[in-house]
Amino acid sequence: MKKLIPFLMAALALPALGANYTVVPNWAKVPTGETQIGNMHGDVAVSSKGEVYVSVQGGPKAGIQVYSAKGKYLRNVPGAPGDFHGFVIRKLDDGEHIYGPRLGGQNILKLSLDGKVMLDIPASTIPDEHKNKNKNGTFVRLTAMDVAPNGDLFVVDGYSSDKIHHFDKAGKYINSFGGKKEFGTKTLHKICIDTRYSPPRILGADREGLRLIHVSLEGEFLGVYAKDVLRPAAVAVHGDLAVTGEIKGRATLYDKNGKVVAQLGHNTKPGETATNRLAPAKWRPGFFSAPHGVAFNAAGDLFVAEYTVFGRIHRFNAKK
Image (tube, rainbow, N blue to C red; front, top):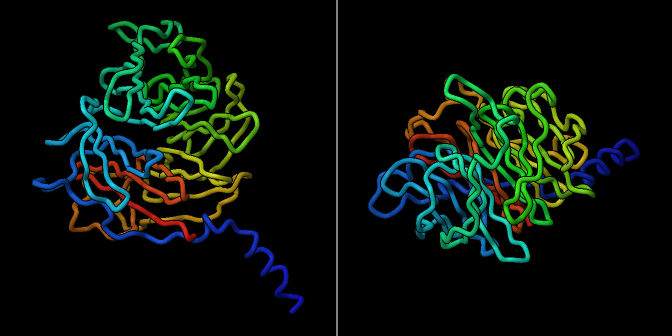
């Protein structure tokens, strides 16, 4: 019995949310009249009502599609762009909004849930000294953003300099920090505001560096949160947990100290991961091909959007 006590205590210490997930097979239904969801190279977010928003870059219903909690296609957000590579939904004092930078247009948008443009920040607002250069001049390739509790905006240039650009809630530019040299990153693909700490900090997915990093909101590199990640593409937090979607076919949940709590959907079949071309005939419920967006709902259920030309969204329910 004495030998069992440490084991039982360790088991009880595991967060139930991280250790107890069940897959919901074939959760998202294809929109009526369509053969597939559409070409996805975007993200997923959940509103306070529990509706699931997914960015789709190609197909008849490109833009932001909205699904019910049961996976039924409801509508598209009117006028939403089809090039949100990374976006979030946040509810603050002024209401609930969609925030995201356009990968093609390279402007930063704040939209109401019904598509009204509340804020439109052009890339020209970012000083040239914080942009990469080529023969055509300076440029950014903004890939994701998140919103701090006070409404400040943090946007990452993940396909170019890896710098993070800071704006206030009205869209006024404040400063830029980090970068490949400063943070040692190789592709700072997406970020989220990690509200598990006081003060909050930035959790970043260094995709080609195979790690997750922490950075203060003032731009100080705080350290490596997790190593040996399978090309992390996206990050999100809920309660004391963080999750990353990994392009090489896995999602990993971590506790506040960076310890692995659970790993979901790990696909080890050769040729089936890190690709957006895996045919639907080869899909298996609960197994990933190339996770590209991750989000929790209020209950801690996990949604994962794939990088795929066909369109695929996973749901894992947390044990209540």
